[in-house]
Length: 243
Image (cartoon, rainbow, N blue to C red; front, side, top):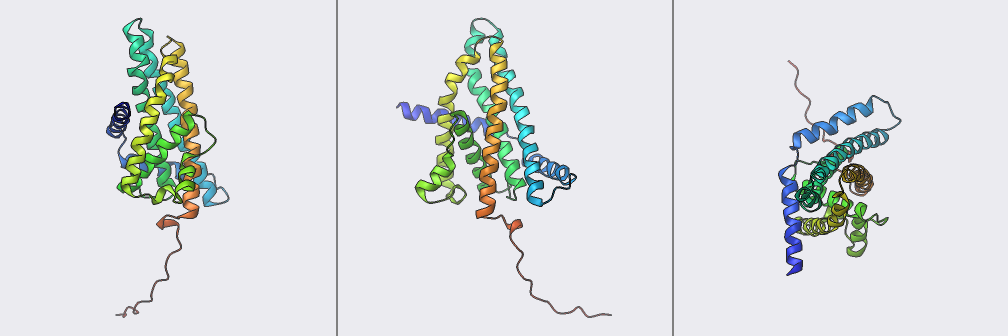
């Protein structure tokens, strides 16, 4: 019974995040903008340029996540009921905003590293990458759950069947929702909650971004996207007749 209730909490968190995500076009535009800016630096290689752009993407979303941490703690300034809202409702609301920015970050980074985020399967993988990286970062684990899964099951996360991806996203969202409760109790303290919420969220999202970058670079190396693969030799067609 308890397990079913916990999973329902995870599904609610996932649904809430999905509803407030930025549209794909704006995320693609951000990816292209940061890549263009990085190219202006004339770095020694395209890989170095892509990594520089990725770091700016992580910084962008870390700053946005920090702002959400401060806003979610504001009810803590109101004595009584407001403090309860900040500790309980506010915590999940904050986590929802943080996950929104971290999923968007994973999507932008996925596009930056060459993957088509207009495809449903790639979007699901971005959700998995963001949620697992968030869970790892929250528990300050040096081990990567993504890599652990690959080692135990002998399959990389990007090769999971869609149903398996969906199942793991819900499971991870459930763990995140449960882990967020203790964080919310600290944030319920007036004024302290604002500073804690803002700084913790920025650090968390920065860690998530670094983890996403590592996994996407590894994926690009082991399973290059179509645009990174050498083009096939084209068959010569007939010469066009002049005149």
